[in-house]
Length: 148
Image (cartoon, rainbow, N blue to C red; front, side, top):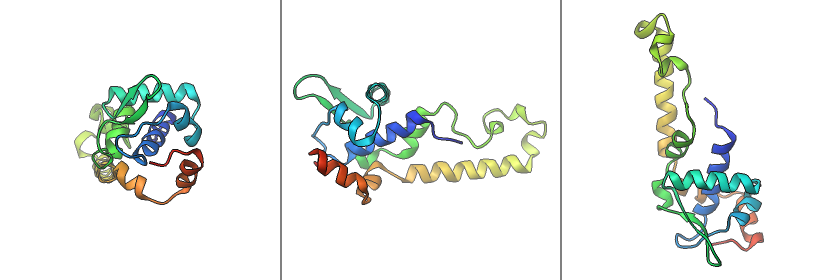
């Protein structure tokens, strides 16, 4: 169970957007600079987030990126599960045939319990929760003129 680089970047991008007013847009350049993400990766990740229905983009002078929904309705679980092809503690949770002990395996039952706990916690944490937490991001947004 590991968060990949693209998922980490996606969470950073969404966090920067969640700290803006709902109707304000940020340029991909500003997001990349504030969140230390290479420009090519910002574009790639934003495209994935748009496909998932989490952000909307607009080209042109008044263009940029913004959240498609309120930050309190977007959970870490939605982001991670949407971006990670396999976010599981053990492969046997996805394919029980991998384990010769199958359903009677006491370890598999514990993996399933832990998996449910992790996913439950990720469901509980919203972008609004993350955006409300004080961090060094506040200073970065203020210094870049991107405070919403």
